[in-house]
Structure formats: structure tokens, C-alpha cells
Amino acid sequence: MSKRVRRQVSRRGFLAGTAGGGGRHRARDRPGGGGPAAASATRPNILLIVTDDQPKQTDWALQKTIGWLAGQGVKFNHGHVTTPLCAPSRSSIFSGRHAHNHGVRNNAASAALDQNTTVQRYLKQAGYRTGLFGKYLNSWNIADAPPHFEDFALLQPGYVDAKWNVNGAIQTINGYTTNIIKNRTLGFLDKAATDTRPWFAYVTPYASHGPRTPEAKYAGTPVPEWNGRPSVTEADRSDKPPYIQDATGTLEDGKRIRAEQLRVLLSVDDAVQAFKDKLAATGQLDNTLVIYIGDNGFGWADHGWTAKSVPYSPAHEVPFYLSWPAGGLGAGTVDDRIVANIDIAPTILDAAGITPNTPQDGRSLLSSYSRDHLLVEWWKQGTAPDHRTWSSYVAKDKQYVEYYKLHTDANGTVSGTGEVTFREYYDLAADPHQLVNKLYQATPTQERNLGIPALAAQLAADRVG
Image 1: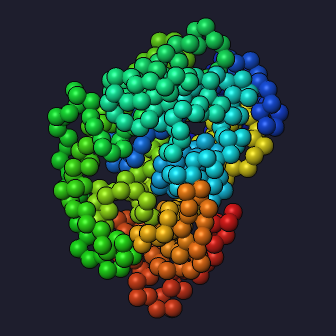
Image 2 (image 1 turned 90 degrees about the vertical axis):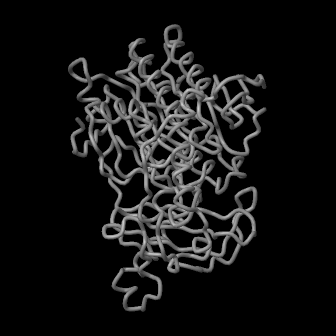
Image 3 (image 1 turned 135 degrees about the horizontal axis):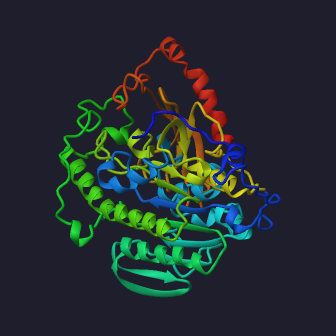
């Protein structure tokens, strides 16, 4: 049973207390990861699993995954992404940076990512064997090799009989793509028998992105009944921005999307179990750092919204697990810190003993660092009159949101006046489903009592930090 404690293991604590008695020496890479830091046996393998559009409340489909990574690792109760959109979020995972710093502000702008800042660059340069299996970045040309991955099966998104780039060869591979990703990853793990370098595997199935086509054996699987939540059946959205007032998602839409997501995630759960079994059989389980996260959440008709891209919790809260028995993270604990996708690259580099020489906004989860709030941001692409660019101050007990007259082009370049067009404030302790926007028709005195001037100032600082 998981212990409800917050366990934070510093790298110093890991070095002092690894199995084998007396601590294990590990040299540190020189800044920039210019060469292998130590013998490969002293550095962890790294398995990073990133699912697509997976919201937080999907535990039913992940029993084997949770049994391993939460039961024998760490479950982060407050896991977020800093931009609830695929390519910006994945670029934040790779770089440890907010989207306003790495430049990938929308799905069309993948080329804006500086590949020199990525965790795969650091690891490969430090002597790691690197592999990518599944989806990479939206708008990435499938004919182009993903930089710094020496072994890859790059998926053109789809579920069945999809197009792939396998180590430079463009081909169609018949079958269910989650299973193909699973088998390619297992082959990569098997290579450790003949290649003694530590490895980094970036594993990213298309589930649970639409069209959410299930594996044949799970197509008719019954899922637990769900009758929505208060944000789905919200009767009055007059305090929300206009695009949310106009949203048309229904409870039945939410039920359908949820059921479809759960069914496709069952195949992901099978794949994760296969990874665990392979690591155990090959003696790699103890010293493999495993991280599991969704690239963003998804609305099940919360406030009428059946997508991501909004500042509400279902869009940016995600499942987030970590396990590393050799690093002291294998006991089954719960961590209540506010953590995010920007923390993944710093964590991996910390575990590998690599000091980055490019900026990072996130912090290693192996440290005791604890933030009191998180910046979450999103940009509208193009000038169509849809919902606007926004940024948000997200704490455990409150959330403040501003919308702006700003938009991006296909390169991620921002234009517009920056005028604030709408604001929201939610008391998350009393109103976790974000039903009452306390800034709607609020007086200046009420705004001051809510602390809005200080929150707005902090948000402005975060947006340029």
C-alpha cells in the first residue's frame, strides 16, 4: 500500500545511500555533457513514457502501470503540463522550458525547438544509447530523422496500419501501433545484453488521442459507469469567457470520449507491463528511472468543452508517475508537490549526473524543491475569432487566468496588442470544479480582497521569466 508521505530524494542522498553498501561513486559530466560521466553501470537507464491527450482520471485503464510505478515508485498528486497542447508540451518535456522560452507555441511550430537544449542531446553526448518509439512532434516531417536518437521508429500518428520512419526507411507497418511501439521498445531493451551503454528510451503511443481506435480485443470492453462531474453538468456559464459560453459538449459526449480513451489505454497498460517484465528478466529493473506522463489532459465536456487548450484543470492536470528503486524511489509513495512536464528533463539529467549548459525552467524532482504555483499558458494560432491566448497562475488552492489579444503564426511568432480581454479567479479549495468565477462582476474592493493585484503582477513576471 502506498504511504501518503512526500519523499524527496536528493542526488546527494542517492549517492550516499544506494544499494550495495557504502554508496556508489559516480563522476559528474562536465557542463554541457561533453563526455561520459562514469562507467555505464553507475548511471541509470531511462524509460520515458508519454501518452497523448490522457487526462488524470483514467486510473481504471492503467491498473498494471499504477501497480508498478505508483506501487513501487512515486505518484505525483499534482502533476501538470505547462501548455495543454501536444507539440508545446513535448518540447517542454525535452527542454525543461516553458513554451514562451523554447518557442514551440503551437503544433505547427515544432521547428522552433532548439535541439541543442534537449535531454536527448545531453544524454547521447554523454554516452547514452538513445531510442524513440512512437510519436515525436506535431508538424515534424516523417522523412526527417528525429535529432539525437540513434534508433527510432517514428510514427505518423494513427492506430492501425500506419506509416513509419524506421531508422531512415519510410514504410507502412501493418498492425496496431501501440503494439508495434511496444515490440520495438522491447527490442531496444534487449540490446542491453550486447551494448553496455546506459540507454534512454522515449516511448510515446498515440493513445489516447482521437480517433481513439481500440485494439480489436478491447473494442467492446465495458468500462465503469460515469455520470459526469459538476463541471460537466454546469447549468450557468455566464461567468465564463464567450467561447466557453458557446461550447456545446454534452454529458453524453463526455461519456463517449471517456469510454474510448479508457479502451485505447488498456493497450498502453499492457505495453507498460511488458516493459516491466522485460526489465526484470534482463536485470535492468532496479537501476532504470521510469517516468510516465500524459502530454496534456482532455475535457470530457467540462464547461461544455471536449478538447484541451483551456485553462481548466482537466486540460492541464495529467497522470504523472516515477520509479527508480536504485535511486531510493521504489517504495510506493505519494508526492504532493506541484510538479510539471518542465521538471522531467532536469530530473533525468540530475539522475544521469549531467549539468546542462542551456537554460531550464523546471527543477529536478530528485531535489527537495517545492513551488507554490505554476505558470500554465496557451496561444491561439491564427486570427480566426475563436478562443484567445491565455496564461494562468495555478496553485493548489487558487487559480487566476488572463486572456489576451494575442495570436501566433505557424512559426510560433506572437502578434497582437496584448490587451487583457477577460479574467477568471477560482477558489480551488472550495470550488475544485471551477464553477464560480469570482471575478465576474466583482468590485475593485472584492478584487483586492482576492489578492488580484499581486497575482496579476506575479503572472506578468512569470510570463517573461
